[in-house]
Amino acid sequence: MVYEFEGRTEKEAIDRAAEELGLEKNDFDVEIMEAQRQGLFKKGYVKIQVHTDRQVTRAETGPEPEERSSEGRRSRPETSGEDDAGRQAVFGDPGAQNEFEKKMVDFLEGLIGRMGYDGKASVLFREDRKIGFKIDSEYSSILIGKKGKNLDALQLLANIYAGRLGREDTRIILDSENYRIRREESLVRLAYTVADRVRENRASILLEPMNPFDRRLIHTTLNDIADVETKSEGEGLYKQVRVYYRGSMR
Image 1 (cartoon, rainbow, N blue to C red):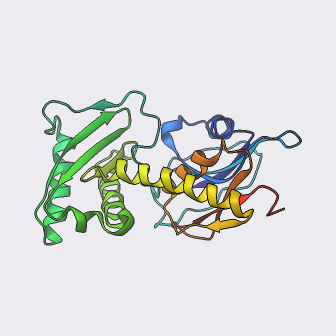
Image 2 (image 1 turned 120 degrees about the horizontal axis):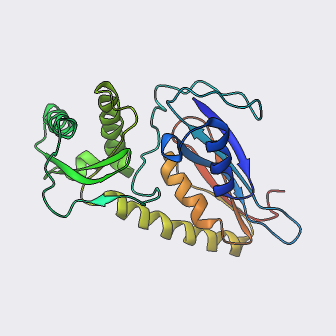
């Protein structure tokens, strides 16, 4: 299900979503649709879209929920960018510690094998309702794909399989060659570079289509720049972020 919430800040909007839906924050995915910084004569504003597979009864406020598409299930690549509180990095034996982890490792290695590639899966981190797996392969560049799309697809399949094992409440994160971290650093640099161009030209720039997590990273990175605002545009899983100079889109 998909819901929309608004607030003066991202935290306020997320807190409102958790309260109205009666869910823990780990039970839903968040995508920032629009954000503007508070100014002297303007209040801060953040609009978010919440995705959840849980059955909820929402208070009769705001828009009615929409059915999420099958493509959008666990759409966020949901990676390392969320709150890391409680995460247990695996510094010792990365091997499976229980039946669920063993089945996930076997599934991932079997999936890669059926694609025609060799690869080994191991546990990357464990935290409440979330577990990360690392794929080691000489074909990592292919498994990651352009802009991480292949890795996102593998991650989606892994989450579907986890649900079939009765672990719908556990979010699966896949990484290979530290792609998630490298991608995050690259997007932060991109965001600041684009912001400088927007401020210099007093115009707007539309970025390439991105998945929900990447878009959220752009929004949050630029949220503290006073004269720059961002907004998601388009339909489907891969939307675009428009970065614009405050006042140029009004």
